[in-house]
Length: 335
Image (cartoon, helix red, strand yellow):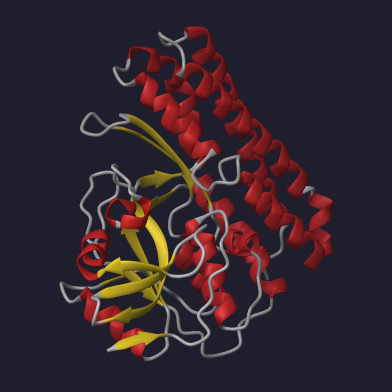
């Protein structure tokens, strides 16, 4: 049997999670932009981990946890990732048979069209169909056009990847929007404040704890990278995470800026807080520190002066982001 959901949607974009959310929302008739979906999901975050069993041993991530579930919970009803058993194929196919798209987490190592030699678990795609004759699932994936084919075996391995950086457990969400949702004028203020609270208080996801205090911890530890055996890869990976890898050039901060610009047009009172301008500056600082990390990674030896300068830049980011989130919580009415 072969089944592909009619009127499936895929609009290529920057980031896997926000592209996937935009696709399913467009399918249900809500033509929101990718930045709007990213912002409603509260996509800003920051992780910093130090581990001897993986490389890079000192690793940062700049997206917040639970973006997809936060988005769906704010928009419609409380949502959590579900965990399929060994019959994950049957579970997903059942929803496809009911014309309900499914969001999954996977590891790009098992997606042949990436031809990746390294694991990256936690990648988000939407599933729109399957073909039993060719034993293939059809998924929509980020910047790629159309639907991609994933063999059943790869599909199962990707969803159950146990790579230590972010072990997966057949995580999925079926997205069935069967009623009108609240207006953006109600959703947007809640989304901004929810993301701000998570950053100020800390929030734990699959990669560990995310929060603005982790930026301060990173800034304090950066000078010590000179003594790390894989310092080159730590710096290069940090550069890639902030500047490349679908983050919009500034660790997602410019994507969030674009969300805020849209939000200010929908809720004019937000303009008084100048949040989009503040986030534009924050994004510029993230871009600067990424280029510093790239420069360090290309040196023959770790440059103590550059690491110290990057540390000061990271501390400045901690101050700017702390002020931004505090301003949002203290001034935005969510009632």
